[in-house]
Image (spheres, rainbow, N blue to C red):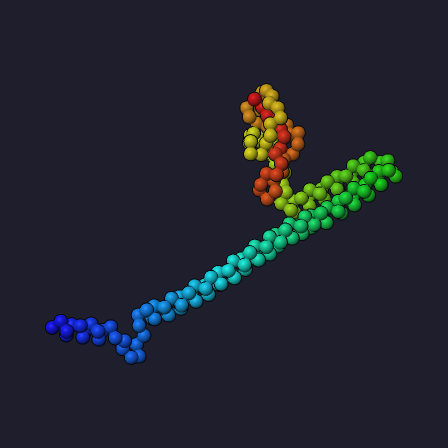
Length: 175
């Protein structure tokens, strides 16, 4: 009986023709998986390089847009500078202050319109309740005409740019 078992074991151990051994199959599988890993690694490196290039291009585009936006604003400010120069020249020649005043008023209105075009708007303050988000109190005074914590005077106008406060109004507030 023992001899029979040995024959069966020997037969199992013997290689069957046409079938690779388990070790060879596993080695082939390892080689295949290593190739797949290398391909995925190479693809990942390419994607990382592409992403870095994308970030650089995007950064350059943002820089260019900011420069262009500033250029556009400054280009629109130049006619106002021209108007100021003409007003000064007219004031030197005529010495008529009414004409000079009207010229300056025209320039002021043009400048205000240009700022509005870019989303800049003044903050209304006088008579409004004091608000730390838009006002900077320079002084607090007692006043019988207005209730407490109301803006009485404005020393410097505040402005918003597209809803965001870019300069707080400097004000005098009632106690």
